[in-house]
Amino acid sequence: MKIRKIGLALLASTMLFNGYSLAQAQTLPKVSDGILVSATGMTLYTFDKDAAGSGQSNCNGPCAGNWPPLIAPVQLPTGKYSVVTREDGSKQLAYAGKPLYLYAADKQVGDRKGDNFKDVWHIVKE
View 1 (cartoon, one colour):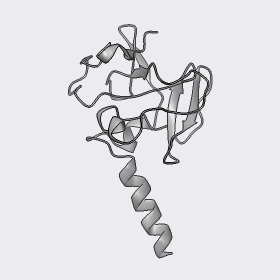
View 2 (view 1 turned 90 degrees about the horizontal axis):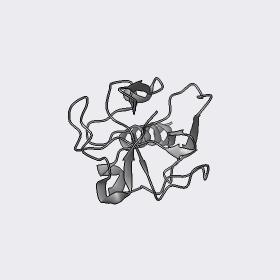
View 3 (view 1 turned 45 degrees about the vertical axis):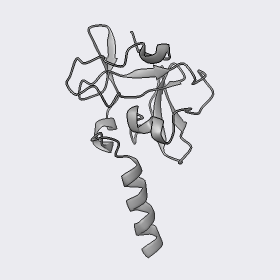
View 4 (view 1 turned 30 degrees about the vertical axis):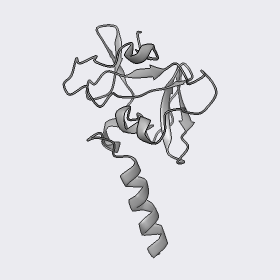
């Protein structure tokens, strides 16, 4: 029982990145001004190093601190949405086969500071 509690605590802590919590991923993203955003309105991004349909994320460790993964909702998505399993075993929401991320420097709804960051991070246009 103790191991299970520790495991659950560890899982919960890995789902908290720079103030983004599991609660943000309980519903699917929406479109705002032609841009895909989280349920709370924060801009979503894709990473060029993630191959569409590969089922994995290439942004782990320190990268995930700057680019928190959008944790998949409990209910499995349909349509253009899918789920990828991250290196740590957590589930990340993907759109058109590419994992979705937030950007830690985006502090307010409407911020898009990560668009074209190092020419490999891009907002998701609908």
